[in-house]
Image (cartoon, rainbow, N blue to C red; front, side):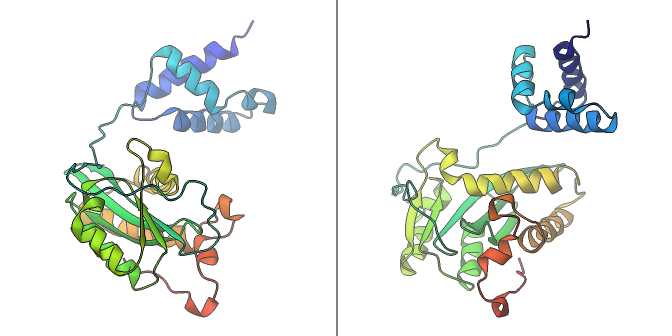
Length: 256
């Protein structure tokens, strides 16, 4: 009798042996794409879901292997602010922006991408790629974003960049309320975390760049695509720009 579970487990091991940096979601996608190409019937295809793949990978002792440098470095002497988004109903653009820093591994080492995203529309208001994990790139995207609009709240983690006096003072001068994730609560900033996953999976991982300038151009191009062309499921398949702007005459392309 054909053992479907063992067959899937063997396929998972084969995929992981070639691409050990893939997690269960990507392996699930590869399995389903392979089934589609081989014209497998729907009953068999539906049995391959991410939960099943995750369960089998745990049973096999497999997980994605990758280096993950810390991007959140806490300064104990800096003032922290409470998390303001719990149970908050976000109903319009520029009510809440979220900011964060993520790392990107290159052949020359790690670089860092910082962005500000409007939570209601998922519109990336400003972003910058930097070789340094410091406050200045954060301030640069903040200054650029504030030329476009001023949010009521900006949410961040408790990293030293976002608890620094210069960052805090920049927000207070604009009467922007400051919200910070609880320690270890990455889900508090889930909207920008989802954007990191999107840009990495849909662009950076599948189109590796050869140098920093090429990567910078690649990121700029993808963000324009994400803002103005890519339909978003959570927005009922509108683009972020369609939701962010309520006046067609205001619609402009960002220059990062």
